Length: 253
Length: 199
Image: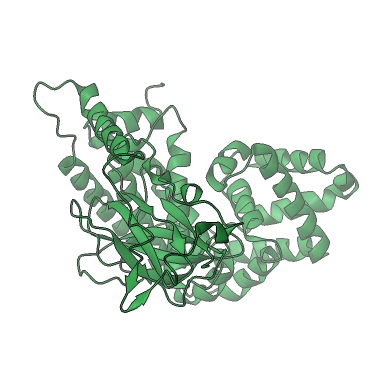
């Protein structure tokens, strides 16, 4: 411990030579900080109980290999499947986003005020191609939840163009805080079901502000088929990160 | 890969030897629990989130890649994300990164005899920003290397070093005679807080 503290003091003084003359104070401060460390000991019953649960779960989730199938194929097969999916989604393939002319209808309100207006009037706005990225489709090593959002109009909805979820989930649109973190919830999709996706819209309230970034995050339904903050949890990918896609609101023309 | 390393047991677990997860659990339960407790100061919340973190780790272990990082960092990142997620769902309007500030208010959930003194200490830590505070906790309390801290909180090793140094300077400048006060409080805490208070 003492050696560790000396290392800390040396580091600080090396990085900030102005503090050398205040070495005594710096040393005292670091020692004091170390001494204020709370002595936390988890409850023994909790530790035992959680251990039992985990080992029981681990035993139930052993890899189920296909007899006769080499181990490497078990991991390569999902990659191949996703590669095929990506190829299917490449431009020119028979997977179409909702066209602008079709508009996106929310109740009786169309998001496209003038479907015949030329696109050139949107100068300065990002192109559809730039905005509509399939960033969530990077090749994974395990099955993951994926989704993509279509180009957005300034309005009251976000179009979910594609979603493949592993379990019933919701796509939730958040505003973005100044520090880049997801902020308040602006809209929630209907329940997305595995293997049965159809393009859908997320009604947002209040409406999207032009030229503003939002972010969409996937939440797993807890089984009650009703989205509830705190009960339905954010979906993480295999690395512990939260998959999300930013949504850029294009000004209406 | 060294036999008996975390990564060795993680790989063993990936191949179906579930008992190996028990080894990892025994090694990291205390660390993850403390890591979460420092950010929530609530025994109940720390237990809930710790449980969730290990369940998530078990579920995602198949995707852990030993060539891309060590198990400790991977697990701490899951824990960090889980804490951020907890505060996001609990209080969406508060900057989720600044969980320490929220934690001070929430600490009433776990009433300890020295809460007032603990608040006095943490009041000084609140004069620096959330990331600096997290770096101090990981470096001074958990004795993590700068490299490990960088992997957990993001950024480079050098940036973490600079942040730590800057934090010490700010604490010293803002709090004036803080060393004397802190040493007094530290002594008080050491003398008055039996371990059972936290268990």
